[in-house]
Image (cartoon, rainbow, N blue to C red; front, side, top):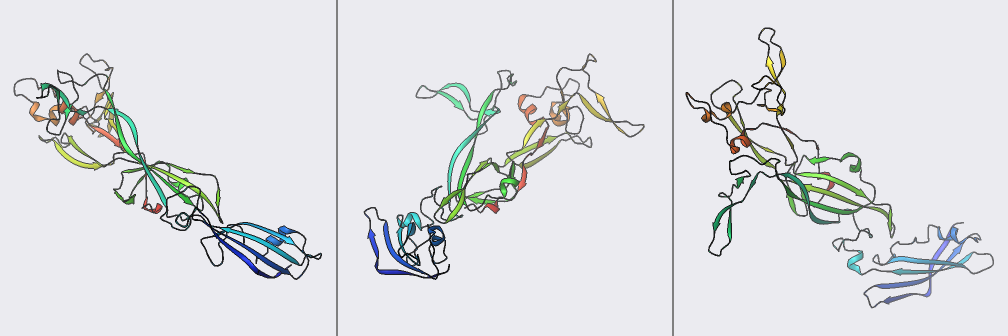
Length: 360
């Protein structure tokens, strides 16, 4: 049943400008068929008939909202069509830089970014301390120790037990996009961090600072002639952290070795401690485990700090100034204990390229 013609009727077009800035175009068209057809659905599926939500052939800012077909002769070879095209406000329909709507598809490059804070509980390490001094206005003074803060400790210089916890906040970006298909990254990017630098919302993001916390994909949506999904990416950020590691010289030198590193803020830290240590059997040259005992030859109730090489931590090897000739060594203070403790660090997030998302 090929349709031979689909022509505009005489005086068959009317254009109306509406008060809200939209435009309505109504058309009457006459279709001539080479054979009779009585099923309107078949008529509407003919290639010459425009589909709903398709743009007008002359003005692409108006889309087909409704279409009706009526057969007029007994043989049903002549049909009359009533078509109604309508526009949104042009900026909302055609301008890709217009305000984003999760219910309207414009392009996959359009995104909406909002920001919030995530929070986690961490041990309190440094802070401004109340120094019991009154300023000229009568307010108590909290000192920042020239920008370094004070170690959180009691008046004897020891840490509190249990260790106080504070909130640590970090920015979280929520990026919303309309995409034609489900992104394959939903299968590949759980628990990942960026191995590359990328741009988001005009900000330059350093590598290993972003954490893909979640990717949410909506059910299928339909807008005009497009089927699409609304995809939301939740990305959290922590800056790179500079750490200074002080270790006893592994080769029994007199001076400790100090090294500075930049590490991901998403790395997890665990104090190197345990109830056993490693020792080399001088006869067999094998490494064996040895149990740690206290001065009374009992197994300690709490784990012993280790030095990063599997041996008990000797504070005098880390801080030689604790040694007093002819006397027992001084005990390390809280700052030395915090700096000299050995941490084993792990990054549990998998490295992935974030530039593939084409954020901007």
